[in-house]
Structure formats: structure tokens, C-alpha cells
Image (cartoon, rainbow, N blue to C red; front, side):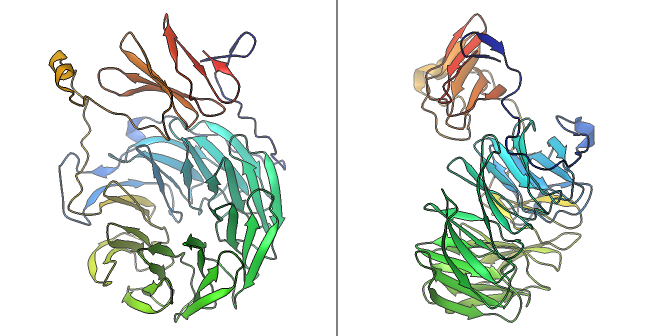
Length: 468
């Protein structure tokens, strides 16, 4: 696609020079997009229409252990591996869409936002990729290992590093906006709510920082290092500590509301749903606590320590354990609904989307498990060519999901539909099937109507540019 400022300029790549990159790390050769299907050989029994809860839909083998948590958006599940690669897999089939090699192991969670994949690597670098193609958008070098996942909110990517700093980076180009120095390394990923960044550090503190400036608002000292990523709900910050306690703090001032003691260190991060806090402990239990009082509702024992952070969906708590199992527990009672055996410790936290549980294991696999018997297993097939009779009855022929809202009016020419999205992309779809032909990332939201003429798509973006 060509970009127009004053005249037509050929622009086959976006402005992806990583402004703010520091250091002189030597990056390995990038192995990317796309690889032959033969290299992506998930075990799958597709297509079926339904299955039993906990049933394996597919699994994909990476080159080493998968410690980090996956993220799911727009038909893609993204995850990192100890083999240094970021993987993007098709959610329906488990087939590899692309992979990219960083300079170190990836044990951090992955974030996906507005069509971009964000991840930290143990090479000390934060990366951003196009989620569809794997194209590197930018990278930013911190001063030490990154074992945490970025939080992307309001066009800013917040990153915490082993160099003791929390960084705020422009999500579009990686330019550093500010940084704040804590008193310890960080395994806790930032959480951003209502203009405040919450993060824990290995100096025993939970921090609250102004999201725009990095100014310290408050900090609360626990009695142990804070490995857990804070969760914020209804004005309360919940976090676990290596002192074995779960803490509830007032989000406005950091005052202690309550704390609950387990029998083991807490490296799991809390999930809050329907007034209940769910969290794992190295004492082998998953706990459910009243969010207002900290009173124990139930606890369920697994076969080993629980590093994994729970995910709650449709009344079910999904969590992994170092006993190699993925568990599904009733959110009200803690009763075990099912468990699935992997081949290694499950440090990864599950991601649940469209009735499927995605999770990694130290055995090197990414697993896709059926979350509930209400879910249908997706079929991989091409939509039929619509008949003219469909148009007279208002029947839905197809729909295509972009990464954000659509304010732009589509343009149609020669069997192709083009439209812009708030996710910064211009999309071109097959008019008959809705299949994606291509998409192009601009520098901001595309809210203006598109025009097509003689096979060229013209679009305006909020980055002040016109593209062709």
C-alpha cells in the first residue's frame, strides 16, 4: 500500500523504527512469517461439532517449555516459549500462523491489543508485532531480564523489568514516555485501571503510579516480596505476597482493608468475579475468598503448588498446577468438574475464549481444551457463495471481526470489501465469503469512509495521513 502525504510514497512497511531503543544487543536472525504448514503439526481431531468438557481440541509443540500465559484475539492465540520464540497459532486448528525468534527465553505472559502482539523476553527487550503477519513493529531494550507481560491501555504499553524500573512506552513506536524505579526486581506485571498503574516488586511493596506521569501515588509494604500481579475491582487492589498472604488494599490510598493467610508462598495472581477473589498458593490449594471481607468461601486441593493464576468464565475457575494438570472448578463450591493431564508442570495461566481454554505447559505444548459442553468445536471450511435470494430476506451471509469498533463506511469494488477500524487497520475482505484478503496497519484509528477506484483503496487515518 502507498502512503500519501504531499505526494504518493511507496510504503511497504509501517513506521516501525523502534524509537527509544537502547543498548546494543545483537539480535538473532528472525524466523518468521509464514512457515509452511508442514512445520506446524498440531494434534487435532477437527472437525467435530461438540465434545465433553476438558476434551483436547488440539495441541501444538513448541521447541521448549511454555511458562508464559497465552493471549487470544481475532482468531489468533499468541504465546511465548523457552525456545526464544513468540508463536501465533490459529485458535480453531492450532496451526502455526507465524513465529518470531527473540534473543532470549520467553517466560512472560503475552498481551494482544488493537491487532498487535506485545511480549517481553529474557534478552531484556519488549517487542511489538503485527498479530496477523508477525511483522516486527518495534522493540525496546530495558536494562535487564523481562519476565513480565506488558499491559497495553490507552495507547501506552507498561512494562516492568528486572532492572527495577517500570516503563511506559508509546504502544505505536516503542518510544519511552517515562520510567519509575522501584526498590527491587519485578516478576509482577503491571495492571492499569482508571489512570493508575499497579505493580508489585521484590522489595515487598505494592506500588500505585500515575499512568500518565509515572509519579508515585502510594505504596504499601507487605511482609514478603510481591511476585503476584495485582488485580483491581470495585476500588480495591488485590495481590498476593511471598509472605503467604492475600492482600486487599484501598485503590485510592493503599490502606489495608483485609488480608488472608494461606499455608504457602503466593506467586499466583488473583482473579475477581461475582464478589469472590480466586487465587492459588504453593500450599497446593486454590482459594476462594469473599472480596469484601476476605472470608474463606472454599478451597480446593491440587496435587502440587499452584503458580498459575486462575481464569474465571461462565461460573467455572480454570487453573493449572505443578502436578501437571489443568483444573476446572465450580466457582461457587470449588467442586472439581474435570482435570486434564499435560506432560509437565503448568505454570501458565489459562486464557478462555469462545468456549475454549488455552494454556501452556513445561512439556513444551500449547493446549486447547473444550471449556464447556455448550461450546461448539469450530469447523474449518469456506463459506458458500451467497445466492441472490439471500438478499431479499435479510439473511446474514457472513460477518468479520476486527480488533476494535468500526466507524468507517465500507467501499466495494470487483468482489472486494474494504473498511477501516479503530484498531488502526484497513481491511480488505472477500465480498462473497468475508475471508480476509489482506490488512494494513496505519498509525492511528481509521474512522473515515474508504474509497476504491481502479483496484486502489484510499483511506484517511487519524495519524493525519492519507493512504493508497
